[in-house]
Image (cartoon, rainbow, N blue to C red; front, side, top):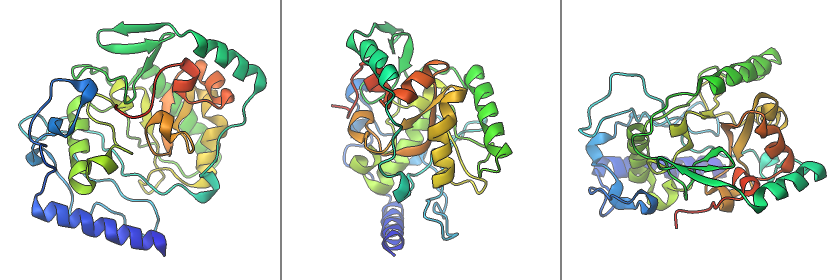
Length: 295
């Protein structure tokens, strides 16, 4: 019942904001400082396209995708297919405090790793011990556009094969690479609908999204919902690392990762994923890099 009330209130708020065409104060300008991006970086409302029915009415607790498509700076739809970011879903209570057990041996080596990380800046991108780091403290340039990493995609295909062979409810359709322009439109839409403070808990500001690296994938179920079922989510916690992935944003780690728990969001790390997952640490903790909020 509480979830239904929440959805009704949220939907009413969304419709109210959209019908009024309201934007947050100061959202029409553009700041040159990505590291301290504020509401002034938001694009004009014309760059956001939203469906009339952004929420799922099937009775599930998960919310549907807002249809915010890739647009250019003039607000025109780009010809190429664009990925869609999902609204956050309610994490099942059985996963609310779920984390992987800490392996003492691996945890020890992880501590050694975090003690003195080698930090490099390559063309505006931050690497810690050779690993690309993107979070609220470490953005990537607006023109960084690698597309989907082919090695990561191949590994994901194997992971999806394994899940489907076990009759798990997962789709082969994922939300993966997003350009800076796509993320801008998505983020603006969430700010318009819910306000910047709330949007920042689940949507990255443009330039601060892991999806721009081509190494992140949001998994969905067969109905196109974010993958939040306890069975499938637990499988990912237990087995994603075997395919080179970690569940990037876990419950109980929000203050470090900067985002709500997202059991559907995978980040490709290759062989390193096994050590990170076994350590029970976030990527920030494992690498010894700063996380948390934008300031």
